[in-house]
Image 1 (tube, helix red, strand yellow):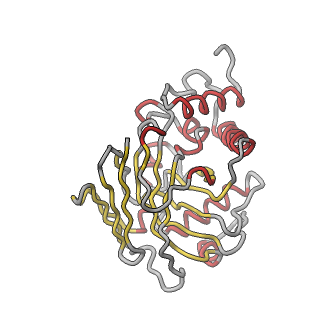
Image 2: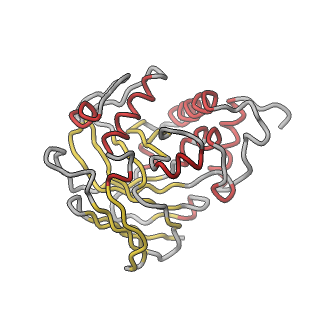
Amino acid sequence: MSEWTIESTVDELLRRERERTDGGRITDRWPGLDLETAYRAQDALLARKQRAGERVVGVKLGLTSEAKQRRMGIDSPLTGWLTDAMVLPVGEPVRMDEMIHPRVEPEIVFTMGRRLAGPEVTVEQALDAVATVHAGFEVIDSRYRDFSFALPDVVADNASSCRFTVSAESFAPDGLDLVGEICQLSVDGDLVDTATGSAVQGHPAQALALAANDLARRGLAIEAGWTVLTGGLTDAVFVEPGRTISAAFTTLGSLALTGKR
């Protein structure tokens, strides 16, 4: 492509998603793709999906751990959009023939009871806007080869969004120790990782507040009824056909999903 623009970036990312193929970094070919432009591309990608009939149902956070942020040279998480086409009902397999190279990570998930608008939202204000708390999985699937990207690349790609599952079991946020909530991630019954809610910005509600404040800079807010994926508690694991990935939480219950070719 001789000249890259926001629209051509969206074209390329949608083509990769549609054809289930990955590719190189767009920033290698378009040095002008900075973070601000990448969020404009993300919003343009969402608008294209909405015109195709998809409906916004929430937001997600990415790079919520300090270690991942240091690797990417940032000091706060990134945000992306969730649509109804990304919903994976509990018990349904991950259809790998619809994806490129999916990975799964366990998350603490919020359902919003009221609208949350920045700027300067605090942890307390964020948590007060939450109706229910759930266990969840996010299936991420980068449109970049080997999940190799610069920060503007992944932002334009809607933070590697693909699918998400939210447990039907719900809990009121009052009284929950979300910082100390333990999650044990297993693959085919073998424990592979353990983390607590503190892995997400020190407190999942801190991630929620950061998302609201980030969206406010773009004139946007988190709406009542939306789902918010607060960020991966552990490192993501690859999905493989027949492989069962499960997460057991202290209070929020358990979830499992299996890859299917």
